[in-house]
Figure 1 (cartoon, rainbow, N blue to C red):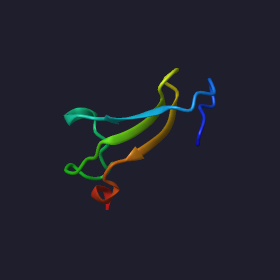
Figure 2: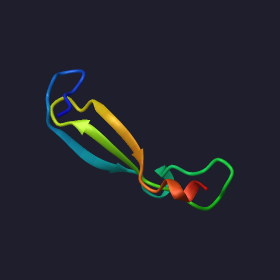
Figure 3: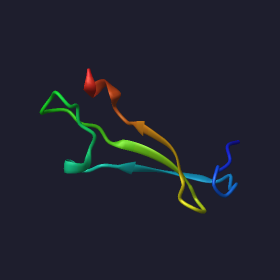
Figure 4: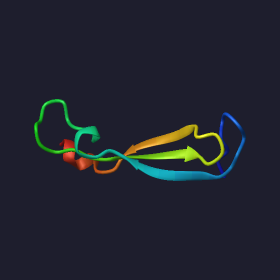
Length: 59
């Protein structure tokens, strides 16, 4: 089980970051974007992980 590096809590939440204009987009393409999935501490909010939801959209 992972623990938060800031406060030592061991409970985490996941959330999706992105909508229309805030999604992650490739630098060299107009089309194609993906949300980012963040895992963060339920107590202090420290982000422990950021993952691109659909990395295949960048190839």
